[in-house]
Image (cartoon, rainbow, N blue to C red; front, side):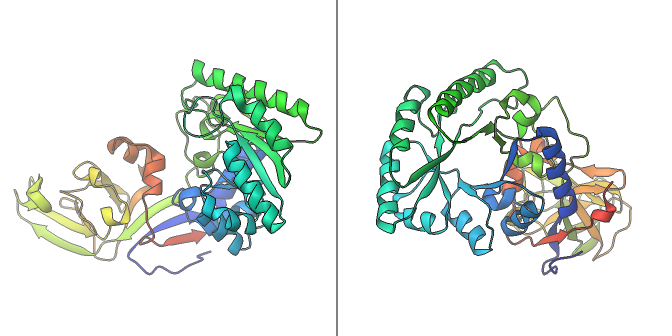
Length: 379
């Protein structure tokens, strides 16, 4: 089912049936552990609201966002399940965070008191997660002072501690000693805190890589973002059936035949080796398609790969299809699969010397998202 119309000759298709299948397969992998889906950064480029709605339909327990703006958009879209804000709290935003019933990360007594004071003024309680820095050196209270802060929070009116969590720094390295140390540190602190409470509390540490690489890191809840969208970080273990749900497509906008030794695009960094057919695709770095793919990347036309010719422009790129045929309006795949030809996100990230996360988050709203949900086509 097509859930929105194409209003631009380049677009991203999201297969919601595959996304839900990914969630179900992760559920099977983690057993009784709860699943929190990070949907920050526009759900890793997949579209915040439609992905959140599909995730709720698939039965996730929590959503995680980076900031107020994302959480507020979810609440305005009538998303009712718990939403954890992973980012640091800005004091001016506390009233709105409370109004939208967002769960907050607390890593200092100073911020905790700001939240508690505003809760008192508004006569609202706030669910909080104590963030512990076990080795990222980003945000979070240090392990040696975590219990002290926990005891302060436990006795602070209007604050309800519902979770404690941390982030693994090296989980994409299987059998890594630092990751093992972080897991043990978190386990020790979480056990100490659980012993001090007379109610259940959610302990969560694991993301996509550690779900596969470190089963001992699952605890009470996991936060597998990239994995839910069908991509594996550096992992030894693969979960059968998990696959990408995103495809980047466009329609050919122009076609020309050019002579041999003709320079293409800015700077003429590419020259034809023979008389060639050059097609123009209406995608560029202004859409988030990386300029680093100039003369490095490929596209798929009619089931065959062809090289990107010359520098990628802000709004367009050119492709050399040699002596083969293609016509204006024909569909081109920039990320995805057509028959045996495939361009993976991992390949693109490697060519750009970056990680899949950055590629996904770089696609902006000029590329419409088209949502398809056809479970009957799934294996």
